[in-house]
Image 1 (cartoon, helix red, strand yellow):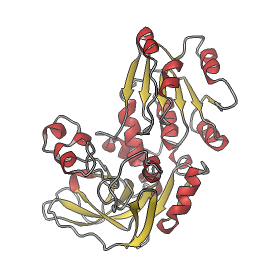
Image 2 (cartoon, one colour):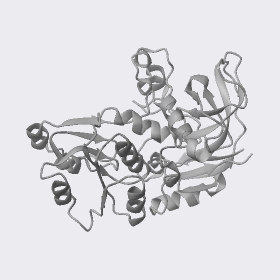
Image 3 (cartoon, helix red, strand yellow):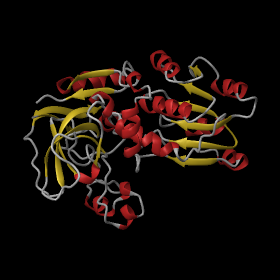
Length: 349
C-alpha cells in the first residue's frame, strides 16, 4: 500500500509499505477512508521540528475508516462497522489510564523513544496516511455510515476541542476571544457559539480564514496586523476584557493573558514546543486569572459521534479540501501558505 512515511527531519516520503496484519487478539485492522493533515503534522515536518515524532513511522492521527478484520478477542465490533479512532488510547490498565489520563499512559511512555511522550498513533507508532492501519479495539467508536468520511475524519480535533472546552464552563452571555482561525480555532469558535457565548471575537491575519470564521459563528473578526486587537476587545466588552480567551495558535499566551478580564479564563491550546513566552506574572496575579492547558480529546469521542450524526455543526466549512493520498505534499504546501483549512486525504485501495 502507498504510505506517507516520516523519514527524517523535514522529510515526508511516499513509499510502498506492506498492509499491516492483526497480530494481537485485541487489535483491529482499519480500512482508512479519510485522514486529516493536522497542524501537528506540519510541526513534525518543520526544521527544526516544533513537535517530536518517531522516524520511520507512517504519519496520520486524525482518521476514520471501516473495520476490515478483527482479533479473536474483540467484542462489540464487526467487519464493515464505520468507526472513529482515538489516537491516544493508552493501555487502559496502568495507574494513569485508570485515573483517566490515557495520554500519560505509563507503559507507553516508558516504551517510547521520545521521553515523556506516549506512543500516539500516527506520531510515535504507525498511523493512517495509508490504506490500512492496525489499532487496539478500545480506540474505536462506532459512527453512523451516513456520516461522510471527510467529516468523520474531523473527529479527533473536534474531540480535543470538546475536551478542552469543558474546562471553560461557557455560560450564555459570555464574551470570548479566539486567537487563530486555523481548523482548531474555527472549531473552538463554533463550539463557543453553540455553547451560548454571545460574543466570539476571532483574531486572524488570513482574509480567507477570517471569512470562514464569520460563516461559522464569529461575531467579529480582526486582522491583528492591521488593527489594535486589544482596543477592539476592550471596546466590545464594555471596558473589562473577555470572559474567555482561547489561544489556538501557539506562541500568543502573553496576548491571551492581556485580553482576559479580571477573574477571566485563558485556555492555551496552540501547541508549539519551540515557543517559550515570557509570562507576565503580574497580570496573572492581579487579575486572578484561571489558566488551563488543553491537549487531547480525552473521553469525548462518544459525544463527537453524536455531533457528527446530528449534523448541526458547520464542519463542511472547515473540511475545505479533499484529495488523494498521493497529493499529500500538495496539501502540505496549501496549509503552509494558509490557502486551506482542514485537508482530508483519501487513501486508495
